Length: 381
Image 1 (cartoon, rainbow, N blue to C red):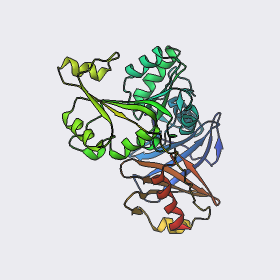
Image 2: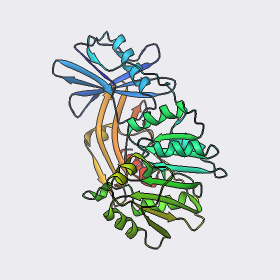
Image 3: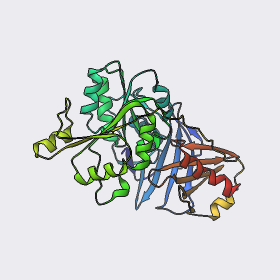
Image 4: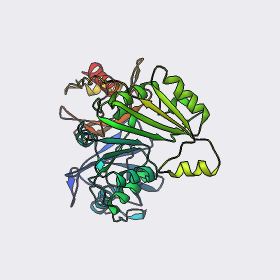
């Protein structure tokens, strides 16, 4: 991740502007977690939170991975400009830029994803595309179909974004998000096919599995009638697991079926003479449209109550809220919050300043996320 170590940084008065960023504040932890603080760097296209930590006789400035940013080069630029305005005595860094565009139109935000999906067009999703071999080949051979790749691992995302530009593909888009949350907000009856090839089976830690009864229900809801999910696995235990949760749903199971496009993992398993199982789960009906609920957090939160409830945790049967971090700056506070459903938790920062509230991070408006977030207003108004 982008970072630099410095022997010394000059003190600065916030807010302060550099060439491309407005460094709005430095918020210091009230919970004394690793003696660190957060620095907000605002630009026309991004809000970047930098993490500052004292490491003995060194100071570390790095990208805060809890906030997803579309461009690593934007993060590096923010760190370089912060080093310049603080006259940093840099000991080491990894801030050299590569030839990647600052704003990549093929890397979607949540709102852009929803705008990309058109029920009248053909749209195919692949979850966890890895090296991208499968989805890149699909996009090349079907230029009139829209392909959406969902991935949480940044190296895979960057690798595929490079290939999209090299191959000049106009129909393949990427989003860095948890598919379990996305599938709760994608419109019903809008997707033609969903690929999930060789998800980690987590045989010894089953609660980490992507595929669950809730996920299957949401997947079938967003599929058009008579469309299906194609799952591939080499795990017999995983096969038995998905068959069990799919009771009452139309499925077809194939053993060692030939594929037109073989992914890197599939090629490995074939070479090892492993059996590969393909399971198709069919949507046989037209699903009801989802009803969106709204966030209802008042602006006049009692910050004193929040500070007094350090590390607050609230758990219900369906969702939870954990205020894990509290930071103070010259005109307000930042809360670091983990919340949502137990099987697909979320995290973001909530900035409270002069009676106003704003998010830093993606807020995917699932039912569990909204219910958990509304607890803040109930507790601290």
